[in-house]
Image 1 (cartoon, helix red, strand yellow):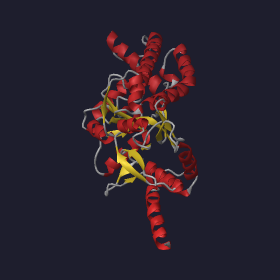
Image 2: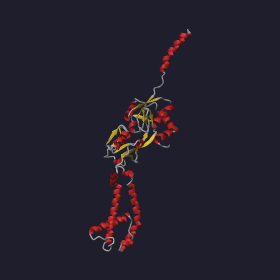
Image 3: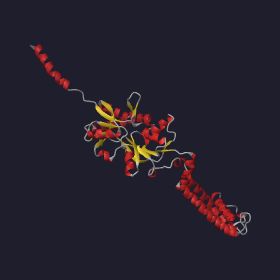
Image 4: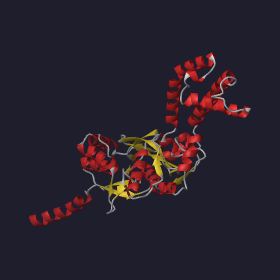
Length: 358
């Protein structure tokens, strides 16, 4: 009787054992956003964010599977609970936090602008459109007229060496030239002038001309720099009226919308930069490290030769993982994230993907 009873007990326990299946892998929605998420040749995922998530998953001992979504679909499916995690270069914003939760931030950056460089003629034209240059030129010609007029009044009857022409217009031109020489070169030797007052003014002007010329040079140097002249767009204030693009559903698009800047939206950063290089756009607004990486990679491939990343950065961004509101995984993920950010693996990932030394 013992054998049949044991057999019956075994059959009774089989359904119980089969019902205790391993937990289903976590579904992680992601999209390509180099260097944070990069799709490799085999279709696998690499990048800084992918390395972070892999470290968290190994720490927690959980299985997961990536599902490809774009930014908008990632946020929507996380908010609806259709996926467990959203992962890429996703910024924390108050609007997004109304419908989903964020992990601790793992990377801080800013928005930046990519613009198209201009040819030599456009660069020259930009010099004379620059407010700093125009102001400096106005000061130069204004002081030249004043100084030239004063010396003309004092000297034109007595000084045939400086005022040699016979016509009124010719002497007016000579007066302006004299004033320009005072402003740009410094004063003449005092003995060039015939009147005592003219010589005295020459000495007095000499005392201040060196400081004036040095200050004027500094103003012009700060205005006429290659970075400022390469493009008509120098910062966010210059985007109004330009043909601007941003990624659909991104914080850069929200930034432009909040400032009433009309702009086009694209699905991919690379697509926008190609349009910018071709002249279809004037500027692209996106996260600074993403633009920097895409432009660097394209230049290595011989592309985007006319595209430059402007040095001005604005609108601080913090990247994080996104989770459904009330996710049971949030606390464990945050603890594992903090541990991984203190690990050699994170420091190596920063070097590998961003070239940053922590």
